Amino acid sequence: MNPAEQESACKLLVSAPDLGDENFDQTVVLLLEHDAEGALGLVLNRPTSSEVSEHLPDWAEMAVSPAFFFFGGPVSVGSLLAIGRHQLGASSRNVQTLIGPLVIVDPAALITGEVEGLDALRLLTGYSGWSAGQLDAELASGAWHVVSPLPDDVLCSDPDALWRSIMRRQGGKLASQGLYPEDLSAN
Image (cartoon, rainbow, N blue to C red; front, top):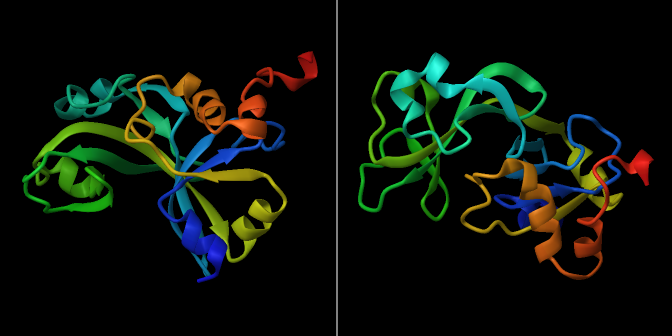
């Protein structure tokens, strides 16, 4: 694992304001894996228009506001992924720890009721994937900023403000990039 891979796993990728890729413009991606074979992450700030209550009513109450499915990325759209907040001391069956109390939840176990001890849930469709060396090249070109997540970033209740909020709290040049207009052509 090279240094860029070591420092970016379980971090946030925050897109540069002028990334030029509609799948990732002004996105925040939770990077789950990054190694010599590639990278995998989940976009955290792209809710869909599909409400959790329409498809999984048993989990709607636990879904973090806004209680919509989120677009995790352009790969395998339609597949279900879940991130949750695990209660201290609860059974850790069918979950994998990410950061602190945050866990990846086995979606099949979630649907069959074999997951316990969650007090918050975000459901996503699809994921973001990069082939071997692709993310490293994008990082080297300045397309992404790697930052450490705060506890509320991953299950953020205001996804529309997440990108700007993270950029602004970095200070310096990154903070000023958070002031870019939503539509750069309007500048």
